[in-house]
Image 1 (cartoon, rainbow, N blue to C red):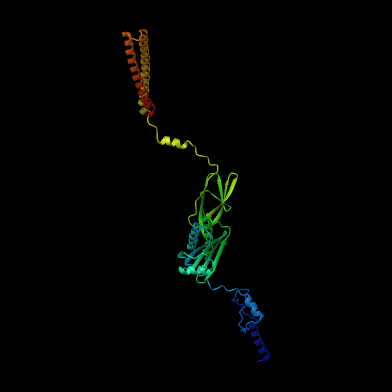
Image 2 (cartoon, rainbow, N blue to C red; image 1 turned 90 degrees about the vertical axis):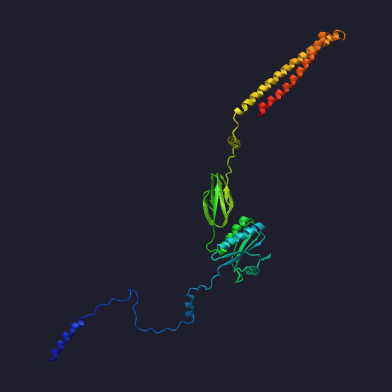
Length: 364
């Protein structure tokens, strides 16, 4: 075969194969990412010097692995110059706040010598009662401070204070509970407050309107209660405790005085007077008796006058006859004495009847 013909045949067979192209294969990685490399990367040596320091500074700080010890048995101490009644209430308020702390199973009232103002004394008091923590409340010239002492670590782990606290038992207890909750109760403590007020009085608690009779939960402590009535306005402190917040009632300064006749009218209504018929016969009898007394007195006066007339007549005859009584004179003398006795008897009867008539008329 001619060599030229052989070359032409080979070239004709090779041209179609050279014109073919391989189909495009979709990448297996998401668009935008760098394609995988099959080449082995050589390990780089660790950075040294300034590069190593720069890499360490860019890392975030590690959180500490230690956690505060849980509260289980908490002893309570009260120190300072509070009066006895206020100190007792503050101690109970601090125990109440400790009982709200998570994990607390027991609260203890500790005894310690006065003064006991350092950590060693507080730790010793806690060890004596097997307490793992001691809550210490101290008051000095208006400053109230609450500390939480870890007996195992022998140091104060939490502390809070409040200035301007008066030694009033309720106010001091409210602030003690607020500070105790701050150092022992992470979620805080709330108490319920309710204020009653007369009509026409508007209230604000810490600047927020408060309806009279509304029950509201607020943080324990001392809050500001603003009272408005007409054009007058006043501000007072309102202590709020965890338990047993004192009831508050605001009376209006314009409340009218009660009517003075209210009580007598009620008394008359409750105890009615006796029926009039029960007094009619006694009063009538009294009037009749009094009339009889007047008649007796009149008869006595007549007999008295007759007695005087007869005695005067007998006396005149006695003088006219020279000191001797004539029979007519003796008769007149006897008639006068008899009339005098009758008059005296009638006067006595009149007096008795008059007294009886007065009793029957006014006493019954």
